[in-house]
Length: 362
Ligand code: TTP
Ligand code: MG
Image 1 (cartoon, rainbow, N blue to C red):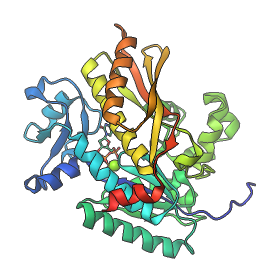
Image 2: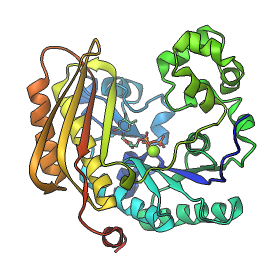
Image 3: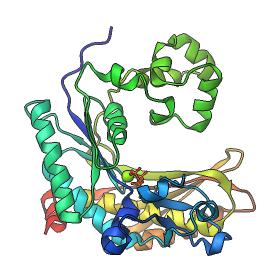
């Protein structure tokens, strides 16, 4: 038996089709149409990938990271738009500002998603009221919908936020985790990618319930020690805390490409996006950075990193993006790339949280 954990209430908030929804808000005549944000499709011959697409475009089977040429072939009459990162980052800041108003402990994990520790409220009924309030405020202030999952652990909150997308609100009260998770496909567990789910499928495991009922020793035999965490997650057991920046003096983002790539422009675009995303994370917490590290993993898993330290603490992410491009340019060769990442470290606070917050909410 596991020790009963102290009662926790965690939200996972995730914007719906974020880039595409921002584009529709910018140009309301796009409402109801299939909208694809990403590389230029060039009449079906374009390189690069889909960043995201509206739910109307998803009904054609289009999704993030799909080659843009395939998206074009699936739906040539869709509206194809290049990403407007500056606008997405501005909108993201406003959203994160709203979230910070409701909790001291906010962990932003990407441009459009965050965990909130809501354990300070009186219980799940009050938390539900706050969740509804957050959804209304985000809609009123940005014109966008989000989905919220609410549970006693991060993993269940994250799976719950995805459960009724778009515009969802899913509450999993303590004790109901296993019955909620059991019928869902294994790949809904964060961390279970295509490869792992294919391997699980070969062993006859399709659902999270199937996974939870396998003996953990058997799982370890298949996947090694990491299977213990997997088995816990499948049962909704996840002791990870909501980490705000104070507890980690560095922040990072990384992206694994769906297919190993030698498309330099595509790689550079991903770096720019991550730099923008990290810039928002810094701003939300009032931090600046001293050191920027770029990581690249080549086909075959060789990983290299390169770092620069700037003379004075900086929060200028445009310069950071230029630095990141330069560093990766020094590391790339003829090999295809599997993953790229950026880490910012040497973080120091510039402003108080209060000042940073008022920046966003004004
Ligand atoms: P997601 O939250 O994964 O996707 P989404 O908000 O577009 O759709 P959903 O309703 O399913 O949450 O990612 C947030 C944004 O990050 C997304 O709008 C665009 C960007 N992004 C990429 O550029 N490339 C990617 O491969 C993914 C997954 C996201
Ligand atoms: Mg989203």
